[in-house]
Length: 396
Image (cartoon, rainbow, N blue to C red; front, side, top):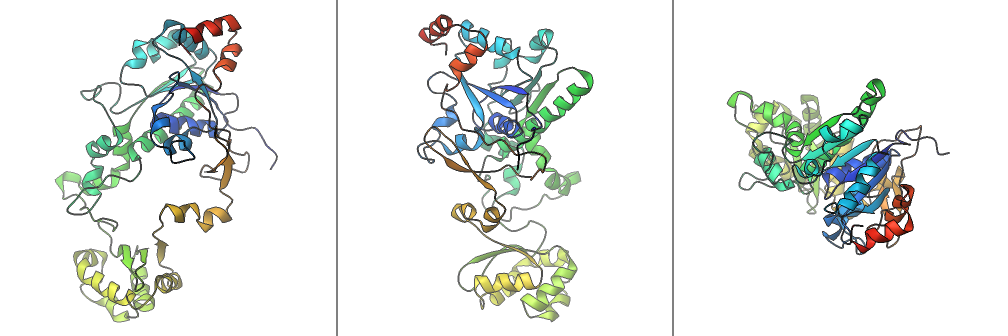
């Protein structure tokens, strides 16, 4: 399609970011057209660049959340570099930061200080526990927040709690920071004033824990850890077929239960068995029902089980690994892949979720450390001698 104006064209975002939460927020702003200037440490950059070397020598976390950005290196401990950042903020709409608690404020980069001279600036602070409260200064890594938010208590097997296989607390915080910045931009359009956004990983993941929290309302028993099965709906989870493959399936209501018994299990009388005639009873007798299902599935291949489930219009899925996801036919059929340039060559990248007919998402290169430093400094009016002086001092 012919490129049209993107929603955030003309918006400039400055980000003091590392790891996942803030970079994921700002990458999504860049997807919508914002100019995102990523401030990194001279030489080494965002420490997530060194997490691994799985993508042609680059880190998997980094390439995921840093496309379409410009990299500016500044040693913010040096007054000259901090002065450059403050000059840059005069041209910006949004500042996003996930430095250690209080670090931005100590450099004069807190909302209260900045808003005195930059009343339209939106400042988004992302932290583990928020800008105040007794946990404000605690270190907060993804696993620790998964634990504090109760996620581990409902995830895993009855014997062993398990963390999520990706950085779910960071992702949650990044998503709420992203949506909050969009809301603040809309608000500024109405009032002409900037906003302070205070996003915590704990509160973000706690929101996603709403169902198990309410299930345990009033000191009721919380949902048990049930591995890949649903804690309270049955049958809902993984089942093994006769060829050793695994099929995920889920039943949502009594109509589906009856069809499942008739078409898939070929045991229509089972639908009215007093042990299984409601979800509550099926959940109560899940081990007995599991044995019946596995016996029936044991006579079929994975493909045959999936075919029977499709025939019965029972929700089901393959248990893909990462190779299966890379090669997923639905992603290919919907044209969800694009090539993105990196310092070491092109790599495939998924388009952001959500097709929008009025514009194309921005899918621009992943920057090398400090790739845009000199260009940005010249844009700010810095002369060659000033740039050289900053280089000689190690400030950039």
